[in-house]
Length: 257
Image (cartoon, rainbow, N blue to C red; front, side):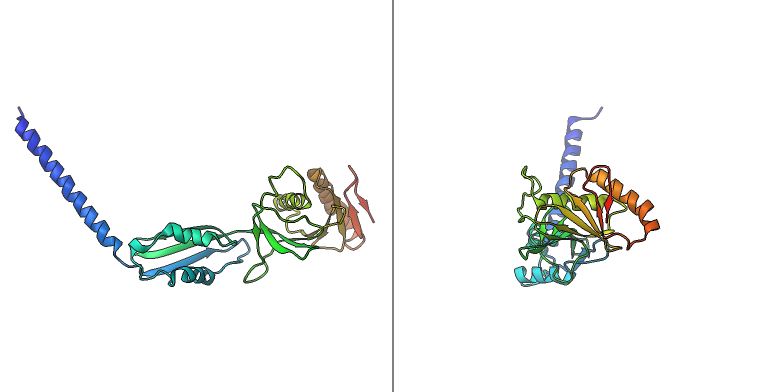
C-alpha cells in the first residue's frame, strides 16, 4: 500500500522538475533574444517569365532607408518582423512579404511580386499596370513587364472599379483581359486591345496585320469560339495577310474584309 507522504513527495519532485525545465527554457529564450542577426538574405520570387519588377537590391534599399541598416547585427529582440513585412508590402510591386529568423540567426526575407496582366496607355497619357486582382501598379523600375497592352478611350482608374455596379470601359477591359489570359489559345496570341471613342474593343493579334473587331464584351465565350474556329480552319487556307479585319460583332457570324 502506497502512503500519502510518498505520493506527495513524488508530486513535489515532479513539480520541481517542471520548474527547473521551465527556468532553463526561459533562460535560453532570454539569451537567444540578445543574440545578433548573423546575416540578411533576401529572395524575390521571379514572375512566370523570370522577370523581376523589384530586385533584391530594391528590397535591401527600402530596409536601409527605414532602419539605417539591412538589420544585420541587430539583436533578435530588436527585430519586429511584422513591421518589416508591412514596410515591404506597401511597395506597389509586392504582393506578399514573409520575414523570419531561422535557427542560425539569419534573417530571411521572401518577397512575392504582383503579376501584371494588363498595361494601360490611355488617351489621357496615363501609363500603369493592373495585376490579376485589379490593383494598380506603376511602370516597372527595372524594365517593362510583358503584359497585354491596352490603349484608347479608357475610363479613369478607381480602386473599386471591379466591384462597382456601374459599367465602365476599364471594368470591361479588365474582364476581357482576364478572359484572354484564361484561354489556352488566345493567351499570348492577342498582344493589344484598343478601346474606341464609342467604347468598342478592337484586338490586335501577334501574327498577321488584322484588326479583330470584338465590339462589346457581351457573349465573350461565343465570340472567342468563332474566332478560334476561323483561325484554325479558315485562316490557314486563306493566308495570314489576306484579311484586313475580322468582325465578331454580329451574332453567329464572322465578317471579314
